[in-house]
Amino acid sequence: MEKPLDGILVIDFSQYLSGPSASLRLADLGARVIKIEKPTGDSGRHLYCSNVVLNGESSMFHAINRNKQSYVADMKSGEDRKKVYKLIAQADVLMHNFRPGVANKLGIDFETVQTINPAVVYAELSGYGKEGVWKDKPGLDLLLQSVSGLTQLNGNEGGGPVPIGLAVVDILSGVHLAQGILACLYRKITTGKGGRVEVSMLESALEFQFESITCFFTDGGQPTKRPKSNSAHAYLGAPYGIYRTKNGYMALAMGAIPFLGELLGCLELTQYPEVGSWFTKRDEIKSILADHLSTKDTQEWLAVLEPADIWCAEIMDWKTLFDTEAFKILEMVQEVQMSDGYKYKTTRCPIRINGQFLTTEIGTPILGEHTEKINAEFA
Image 1: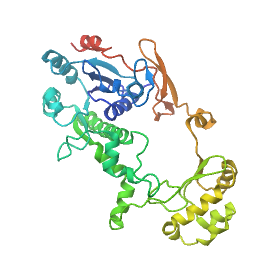
Image 2 (image 1 turned 180 degrees about the horizontal axis):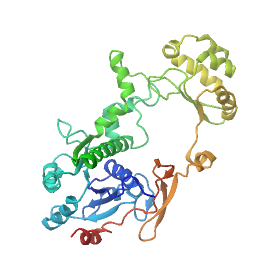
Image 3 (image 1 turned 90 degrees about the vertical axis):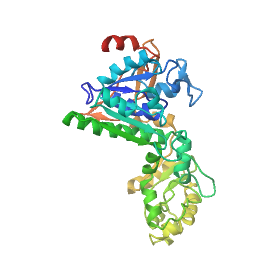
Image 4 (image 1 turned 180 degrees about the vertical axis):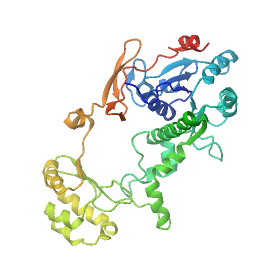
């Protein structure tokens, strides 16, 4: 199918997860992404997020770098730098996620790139921004979750800080970078002017918490207080949370407590008619509800709650989910193949265009796989 970004050339210097997640989305949307790698390769090739190795390299690298081309260049070499400049001269987008100052040393800082290609969209992602006392700190997801307040929102009160079990700040900042790039690409195409997109992981992590931070300022800066049990949100009142049933777990979102009490046959809950009490007596209500829900199987409760339009769900692991008809109809898994014949399964882009999936059969590039071909093309 014809994709929205067909014909767009992206020169991507980014490594690890945040930047490459942004260029992956651009590639899924049709852009040609040339991944510039140092002679030893993107460090993400050997940064293992698990002990699963795919074709001799990190599973993380393969998950985030499919459908791209690999071009090896030593940017400290004048000859290699000249070749890369030829690519930049024809690029629509240049992106990187180096720490402040590194792009200058490599000769791809904004001012230099502007002299080569004034209309380029120049996108950069940092950990903490380019100014201030934190600018040189490592932009690692767990560290950003820790300093941004995210770890204070998860788990139960008294249980200590709990991080989200995914590289959520990496992915969020990559999403924001892709959004900024797309906005500037629109301007470039319509006016001929490029732009400079700057995203920091810290700002992305803070914006992710916009609802809770707004509450913090509105209630006078009171400390965040998580529920004592069955926590799923630090600010929402009962019944919002995760509950054990007789044979598993279920999630219960918003609902009027007295109505829930009648529906579930838990008369104690009918004693909380005031909406305010669902917040001020949150722990008390959740304790009653938790004891009651533990007496029957998940499916028995869902059979009562769902017809009454109460927002609830069974807690599933991946195997359980993948066996459901609801998952299968989404066709979220695609198989891609590397040039050496190695195949692996991964997720597809979640976006549909005109009812069609954005899929690809192209896997991860071997280090330097496309260097000679690209040099000949751009010579």
